[in-house]
Amino acid sequence: LAEDFCRSAFPNRRKGGLMGLASMEIALNHQPAQRHVAQLVEPVLICFSDEDASVRYSACEAFYNIAKVVRGGILPNLRAVFDGLCRLYSDVDQSVKDGAQCIDRLVRDVVTEQRDFDYSAFIPLLTERIRVLNPSVRQLILGWIVLLDSLPQVDMIVYLPQYLEGLFGILASDNRDIRHNAEVCLAELLEEIRSSAAERPARAQRAVAEAASTVARCCRSGERRPEDNYVRLMALHWLLEFV
Image (cartoon, rainbow, N blue to C red; front, side):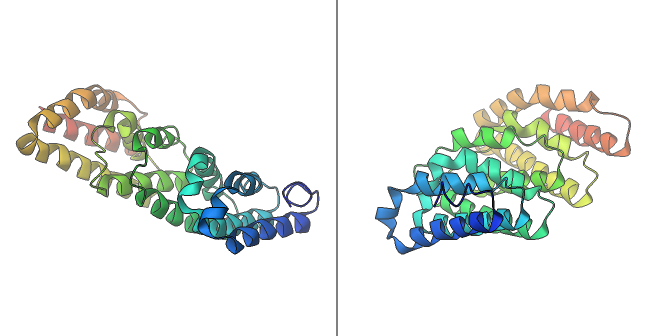
């Protein structure tokens, strides 16, 4: 299926191959399916970049059905999955974007249900893409940051230096909704630091020390657009809180 159909020159054969792979995975029980994850997932991920929108949508359906069965079995391929999600989120076809959103929700569920998931290895996947200008990708990254910050097992303040400057950069977006979401996220992070000052002072002091240079840089960076002025204003607000 992977070689003769998913790599075929004909879109309908590629779609048939994707449907076949997903059907095979659904027919298997959870444990037997784990042994074949790489063979099933990798051809589907390649089809995320197919030139035909209907094939890309079929790849979304196939991956969703495979991931529902293997759950945590997709995590060894998480970097490739996340790369694929970013491409799908920026797709020109709305049905493909809708499929990407379904995959994203499922991947979030899979990640948060894992007891031993390595969040420290996952955060760089977000920071590598937080500067992407595509508004849909920015919304994807913001959603993950907000999700991780809501999890009691993840201390996003520890990773703040990795993604803080990117969050400030999103405040300069032309998209009002994304700017608002970034503002809310930054406000919640600042409130966490403020709360830690009384409850966990060492944590707050470390966060301020590690973030101060980034905040200072954001106070003087950017062009002279109204949106850039807002970035500097928010950075000044953070700096005032630090002082």
